[in-house]
Image 1 (spheres, rainbow, N blue to C red):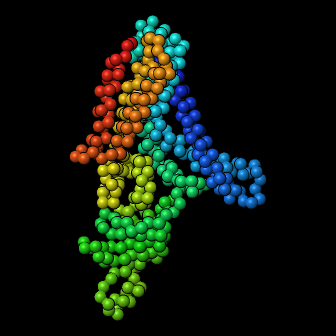
Image 2: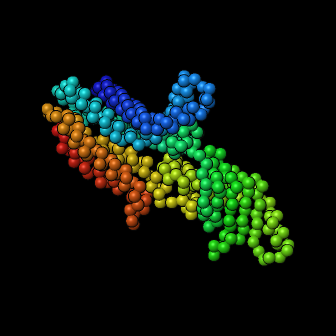
Image 3: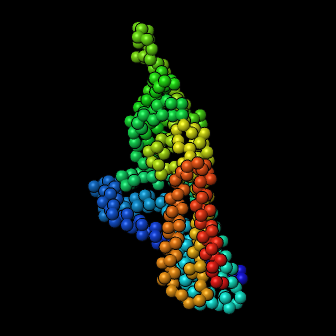
Length: 375
């Protein structure tokens, strides 16, 4: 039986890899055709006006690989559930057409036992997704949030930071924040009292974030405190008091999340735990959902896979085309609806518990489908 298990598991993983690469290459090809001018312009800019056609083509390939290469891990994260369903369908359809399922049934092996190698392999592929989410996506996040205007760069372009409040109610403003270097250009920090009045203004030519002490290290920093209009105080306001660091919970990750909401979905559990220590500057409920949703997603993927097994584990003649359509009609709405509900808050239910509600809804359906399978 181990030989049969290895055979089924090998065919399933092979089909999964083929589907993954085919769909990813297809998506990249569509994007390349739609945005070809953007890629070509960046390639010409890199090689200069005197570059040859061969050099331009090589530069174009490098740019496409640089822009889309890291996205295969993001694509894997999004598609692993549907790809396991597709690979299962192809695997058992091939075995059905080759009369292999009939031979296994004749040998006294029930169809539930035939499905075990696929379920184990799918669980392993979803386990890889957890490692992908925890270790790879957080490191690649600056590259994954790039838009087509950032083609050829190692991260997103610098953007302005409008007045943003931290957990203490103080404000930060900067005309340019560079996520790649974690630096602010010409930042202004406004310390405010409980009534919202400014009690100190801190300015600098540049600020660089230091994770060691949780503060922005300032270049030519000045702290100005408003007060009564006396000659001495006016002189102090003009000169300011030197300051070299400004502690705050407005970290580069927080600023990036407020600009690119997608960035939050790529954080590791460790990063989310650190950000939850400053609930005043982040959406704590959303981050808790993102932290638990990665485990719920694995459960949803596995339940949906089990739910559609009866459409391909067949003991009697049936139309594979019809069953494939029925499988898609059940798997796609179940997966998409469940995954979309993970981002929705449920009133009165803690976010750590609410993300498991779709699993509780799908489990009875999966149990009914499996119990109705004739093996």
